[in-house]
Each structure stands twice: as C-alpha cells, then as structure tokens.
Length: 80
Image (cartoon, rainbow, N blue to C red; front, side):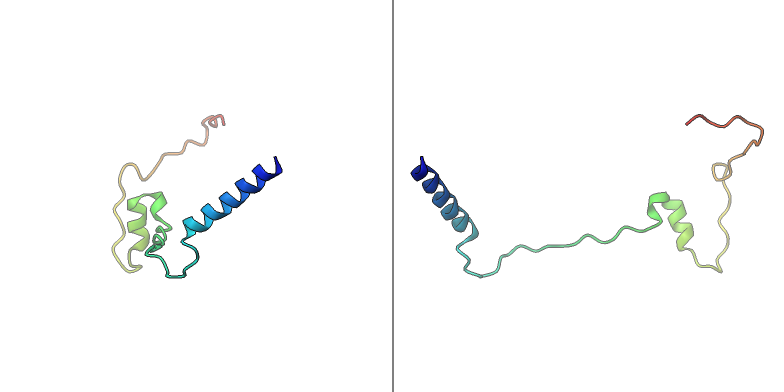
C-alpha cells in the first residue's frame, strides 16, 4: 500500500512538472488584459451618465414626464 501511494505521488509530481514545461523560463505567449473600469454613473442609466458628464456651463437638460414622480404625503407607505 505504501509503495502504491509513493508511486502515485511521484507520478503526480512528474505530471505536474511536465505540464509546467519543466520550468524552462522561456516566458509564455499569454497576454493578460485588464478590462477598463466601468463608468461610475453608468449604473444609473445612459441619460444620467450623459447629464453627469455635461459641462457645468451647458444648457440644462429638458425635463421629461418620467423624470418627475408625484409624491402624495397622505398616501399609505408601500409595504416592504
């Protein structure tokens, strides 16, 4: 049993070294490219990101019907 364990360990070590290429140090052809960081305001939608990037002295964005939500202070709160 001990010989079987020793043989399997030596086989595993030999296979792992063979898979690594024996440590020749020739450098691989693998190129790691890190993705660009996402825009911080993009998660809120394209319109918000465009408005956030706008110049401070530019014309204000026009208000559309979905931008303003009417709030009724006497309404029942929504259940969580």
